[in-house]
Image (cartoon, rainbow, N blue to C red; front, side, top):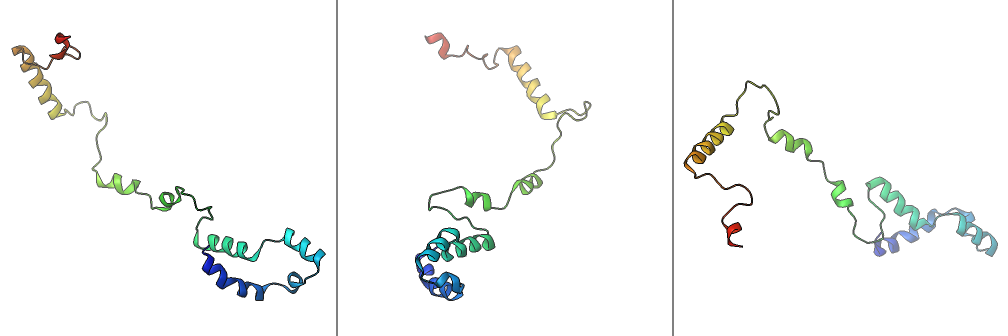
Length: 124
């Protein structure tokens, strides 16, 4: 929590403290200080619970990314549904065209070389 905000809130918190906490006897104040949470911490915890924030130590964390809205459904709805292993009678025209072109080029000796037998392999 911001230090300026804490300075502004501390007097208000003191006015809301129970009378038992305001007593100045050494034994009761020492016992109450160890058993209760300081008012500033309780305000910070309450603020975090209300606004859904994280009480951190000032270091970077991934909570900013985790707070973002999920985009998975929007991405999948953007693209049309695809056919994966659907009807065997359905022919992919583009794949058949590429296969026919590769066969045509290989008959003429113009097909791309097999992997590892390119132009640079003979120079070594």
